[in-house]
Amino acid sequence: YRRLFYKPSSGVATDHTLYIAHFWRPMTIDGVDHIHVKNMRIENSAGRNLITISNAQGIRIVDSELGWSVSDGIEVGLNSDDGYIGGNEIHDVGNGIYFESKFADTNDHHDNWTITNNHIHDVYGTGDSHCIGMQSSINNQITFNHLHDCAGSGMTFYSWGHGHQIKNNYVAFNDIHDIHDIGGYGNQYGIEYGNTNCPQHPDDTMGNVVAYNKISNVDNHGIHSKSSASTVPGTYSWSFLNNVISNTGDGLYWTDGAAYGELPDGTPDCGAANRIQALSNTGFRAQNNIFIDTVNRFVVPQRLNPSGQDDDHSGIVMTNNLYYSSTGGGAFTWQAKEDADLEVNCNAAGGSYDAPVFACTVSSL
Image (tube, rainbow, N blue to C red):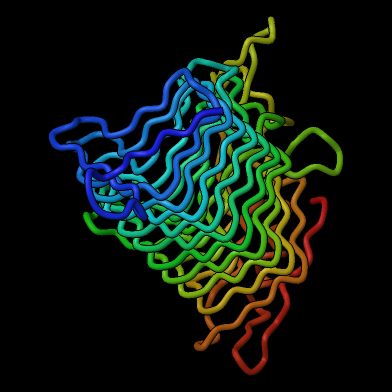
């Protein structure tokens, strides 16, 4: 076991500060395992990531400050698992912490990372600039982070399809606020899940939990998500539990992943003629959430899939969600032909600060 410190030529070595001038990539950890980075201050990268990790296991980055780069504060690339990022401040960057996957590599998942107690703010750029972004990830814990002033989203998960998986991630006790459009790009979300739609098997996204988070002051949706109902009984793609969402656009906006299909030999294919309706329906669980002054409470839109069929919105559970509105507004929008009366009943419920109402209970439609 070895430790390497930078020691100043004079004075007391109470802080380990390394100044590097005109260095295009300040720190790269590639092909080595179990590196521990602590109490570092890294600034002003010339258009490159401040820390880049790839082909490395068990990396720890703690109690450091990273700032001023048009790229990522920390980028985690291919074949890098079992890491810890905690107690850092990351600011004035293009993305805060970003886990990047290779489009066509079905085995490229980021597994068993803990991201906790980080303060990430002032993330500038487009609607694709995120405080925390994860492509293809399994068994990660993202907790107790303070995320604000991000141009795109506080937190985003994204799958390219092709066997990429988003499974068993736990997102909890994060404070996400002030997600605003700074360049006319749109797509501002508190927490987002997205995918390419084509092809995306529903069982590649399941068992994810978003719980006990505070999301506020977001230009667009508090939570924006899309994926299909898992084929595993009792398992949901995403569960949204005990979150507080305030002063956003739609509180929770869900749209199905749509368009999963297979060729006769089982090869994934998104052509309209090969779409499998039973594997393309919306599915999620939302329970015990509080919505305060959101433009709309829930929005589950009706959309035609490429083969012309209507979504039947199966596998959805929504119970005990509490709504407050200072104006009495905010619709519960449910759009599905066979359940059209549900939208009317829920919208009629109303609700205000003085007389809050609970959501309609929708189970196994």
